[in-house]
Length: 428
Image (tube, rainbow, N blue to C red; front, side):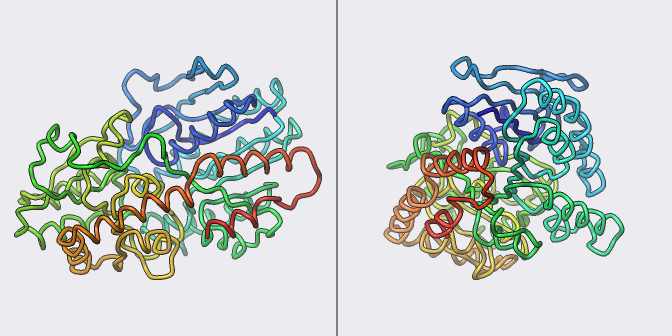
């Protein structure tokens, strides 16, 4: 099959959506398919184009010599240093505009069988839809998070504003124009029904854990010594630092637990919220900031944790299922998430750690203490986390269903997803 993928985030970015878009493209190429990716210059999570990359020109490459059927084109785009709501819209629109000519050229010369658009951002559909029309390809939209509703929940956009109404209208327009629409959790799929998407178009395509590269550690991680962490316990957050995650609760909890001489809060990451988060942490000796660690040290980094912290703001836990959760579970360490009961995030963490209500610093502090003071309970939750990663987040099983559904979509006129109901039954 010939497959064209459009998505704003891709390797060499090493976190969030980029990891899974890159993984899908590489797995498709490894399976023998001809894959063309159109993406942006790498900029995330620092919101700055990486050093060594051209700011205003395109760059095409075959990034892996062992995958000659994988070609990637990086497009220039506007990257705001302060990504407010309006600037984010311009950011995503700039990528759609620079991706459009490359997508149309790929449609004319490569004649893809499938055009796949990754959201965020749905604006990439402005390039994907015409490319599919020109080539006669089937269309697939994969939703990693509901960016419009997340923008409302985090205050980046006001729902009743002209821009907010336009964003909702654009989302509705996009959803009507795809043959398949997938997302990463049961509640996120249910939202598609609320938005009027026919069940026959819906497919569950979960993110996955890197079970080969992320392995549970016995004893203390060598990363602790390398980073100068001397306490026996670490409460770890590793990933993007953005306002939609409720990260401001971490300094609040660190203050509440400042008396614990045996505990360090470690934050490994970068992003638009880093400066504010650092300011909120002033005067605290028990909280440390580190850059994102390289992929080859990923497992050791996750292994530093006595507990993983996964904050989320109220109202966002069914709009976004954080991609970092999969590898937290794979590391065999307990996860403490902030989420309302009954949400997708709460359901995934249940039995593998603890869930406290968003914004409740006292409850989160108590949950951390309860786990680090009970090593046996910590070990039980950690083992359950690793088992859940195998049960629900195995990449081979997820990819096999995905590939089968693509083949079914391309080769038949039947629009019913053959594996969708099976995926929902197995993984909800």
